[in-house]
Length: 64
Image (cartoon, rainbow, N blue to C red):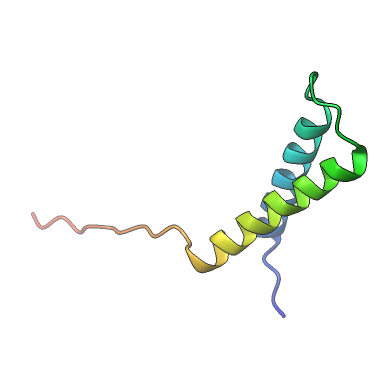
């Protein structure tokens, strides 16, 4: 199984940002375990979308 280190770093950063933002929302009394679950759900959803619907760049060649 091939791992792309750049994608792995991207997914870990997304997981961390979502988990910490869920944990530190001031008016939300959410348990630490639930914040991690929300982070895992967001990261997993992003992984699936990134794998099955990747961004496509179309380069047009200019004819002079």
